[in-house]
Image (tube, rainbow, N blue to C red):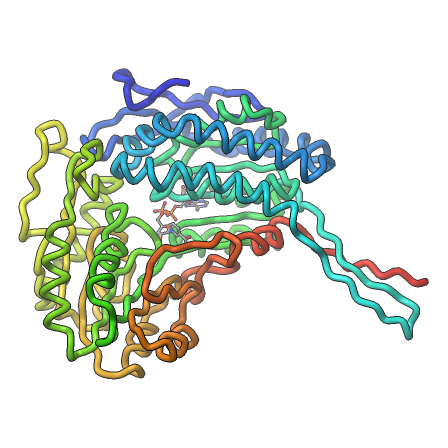
Length: 490
Ligand code: NAD
């Protein structure tokens, strides 16, 4: 397998259609964010490439959906084994393509990608359907579930392979065939995985990957009449386009979108554990995780102590060359994104906020090779009004804002005072309080006294502008199958 991290010449990717690599006539530049240079060229696919991929997926559907769940599970497990066996190459490639640290890719992205296949291979074998009797009518009713057909899968750049496999695995486990479109900014590991698909014995056409932009390749996929369902992870703005584009076809949609996630910290929290975790939840993966904390509300009586200790801990969060194991963060995805994140810090300053550390306060000491990379240190801001865009809009970078509250009611109202509702963390040792908060907070995921601890069996997804639908063991199975009610008169 080629190792993109070691190639000096420009890497040129090809689409994967019908089990074969297919060259594309035109390409888009893809940057190495840690050095700010083009290192890869990604197919600039459009309607013809999507058409070919959908045709291949349609052709493969009858054979793949007719396989037993055990036969499909075998293929998924083989893919998981191959990813596990190639963790290092994939981690290096993900880091170079996305800007994240190699350590993060090696310990989070790639192991979780392998686990996605392993999890859904197993989960698939354990679903049961409903049955009900209406003896007085002489009838028995039961449900059956059938794969839907060709699934369109669209994923973002922040956790490239992790989120792509989170869709491919349940879709094909349930017997669908897929056309996937990764982010044009982070396509390399998806392309590398296509080779593993061949080795794992994924039949041609079961997984097709078309690379390109959202406005061309993504749009053609969402608007294709033979793709009855679309699973999308990305921004709320794109989800609105996808919803409108797919509406004439009444497609089944799963939308996993942005967040503006609060941490609510009560005075009785275990502050040592809370500060360590809240630094991680604010800044991990450069703050480029939809679940990252970006608003920290702290009970008034501990506000000053928290802020002082939190800033001290944030200052220790190291940013620099992604290959250096001593660094916690690497580079942001692009120059444009870095500028956008910086603009929120500038706005906070212009509105009278205090920047305690990070952008404009702390100097980054980068190796010469990374001087043009898109780096930004962990930044903590306070003194911003809840109505400011800084507190309302998703920043998606290493920036978090701290603000005080005085009562449980106020904490709920502040926590819920945005259009998003993806995730929240609540810190308190009072079990009654955390249960009350979990009920009142508008978020699809509420972590109490922890963050990012996941059981893939349980639903994942957001409310309000953070999404529609849920994914996870049973939820993904339900999304990727069509349920039918059958009635038998006896
Ligand atoms: P984005 O919406 O710009 O792009 C996501 C994907 O959609 C990309 O593959 C892109 O090419 C494609 N796309 C763009 N326009 C399209 C169109 N008109 N039709 C079809 N496809 C189109 O998002 P991004 O910047 O890549 O990712 C960051 C966003 O993703 C953040 O808002 C983040 O919160 C969100 N996100 C959400 C979750 C979640 O599970 N809720 C997880 C990760 C990221």
